[in-house]
Picture 1 (tube, helix red, strand yellow):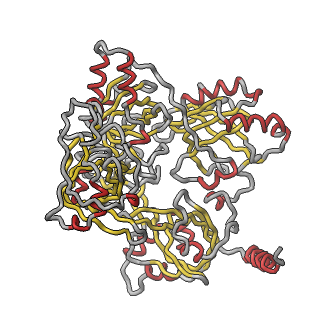
Picture 2: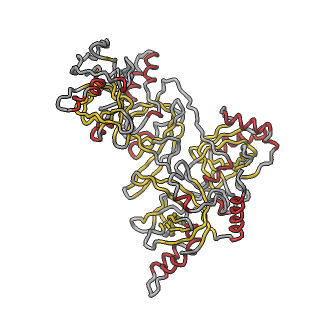
Picture 3: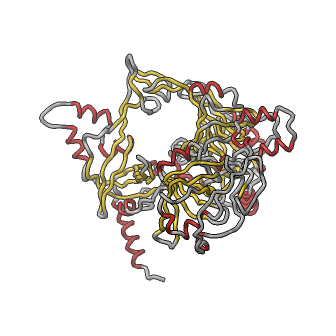
Length: 631
């Protein structure tokens, strides 16, 4: 296997135009540096040890890269390539049409003489000659003939089970440390990598769940994994893999994992801050690192101030919160609606520097364990950090823990120290108000008044980047201009949990959420309408409660009108009655991806008839602001 590059290859090609003909150009060997994906192609820097030049693989070579045949810091022989100009710069780049890997991945970038492409201007008319191939075991470097580097050790591509097998032998501590250093950190993983091994701790383990859909029945569970640097990723296992690894994964233990796959995380369902999610199958390898020195990963938080919680009400996104404990309630028992089981619950009230308070409901073991500990020390006003909370609309804004929530009392973090210092110096004397106080029912949609953040439709449609990071909320007054009559306006829903149901094979309806079969179901709106104002128009999505206010009837009632026959189409008449009526909408703007293309989605969170007194005050305030002299 070759471990050398062709000396002065790049500078010679760049300075000799005659090499532009592929017929008389000799094959040269270069090192691949800074390999990066760009669309369906990959860019890199071709390095001959002295000179580097930007280069790009054609799309036909992408499978070679994904399979791992061509890797970063590896050596390749350029068989067919062209030299092109970068139009915006006075530089050139290689377009590689055909190549082959000729050497293993090296430890680092070859850089014997630092020399840029622009400095390679001195003509070199001599013909390129390949340097003698140095055997792998010979690690000497001869600069006059070739440039060599010792390749990476073979155990870099070893699986988790191979590493553990070697560790069970008589390996010295230094050897174990060397192997540990070659474990990939989670932050370095991407879907295009081939072999990798990670060392992680299980920081959360979900329950085994059974599912039933059109493709059949199965089971699934997931775990949250954290490495030594605190980076997290969610790993999911289905069916055979789920049954194989469910008992093996134990909360709090450390494992070596290999032979998994990565894909882009679904933002609607991801539970950790990572762009990717991992899938393990029955061929994946999971070995407990029982003989390793245990590490305790740092829990990473992304705190949301209490005063901004309204933006997350009834959203799928989970939030992290930090606050000073104001009060702790006794434990109470709540009967769960799905199975009538009694479960413990405890409410705690937290405050922060925004001088707002919010109630957090602790459930199950958190209520009886951590909750009791907080009750015993409530008079000392401890600081509590909670990860993964669900934001609901009970009493305006409320928070609840879920199975994966993590509660830390008096954490050693800068945010906790700053909050405790504020509370001790002035916070304990400040009058606090609940974040949900004074909110109208319609303010569930972002905890703002229907007249806050008022914009025209053109403000939304002319800003395609709105909602990229997280949902943004606005209020707008517009007219319903069109309701498409032949759209799918509703779905069959469970009468208990309102989730979608499917028709059972024999009779009735199956609810995946309740895991039960029901004889009847209800219809719930999922409707798109076009709205118009003086600045423009756009399509908005409206769900059941808001659609009922727009149409003035339930989905079941509208379905009856649709099925009736007669001279007058009552269904069409009902839709026409709803058009050209004015409403005040509270909307959220998000970005959805469809066929690889990002699209703006505007969803109605609240709808109300115009309050003309409030509208007048809004206009007067707008006139007053425009008439103010500029400073």
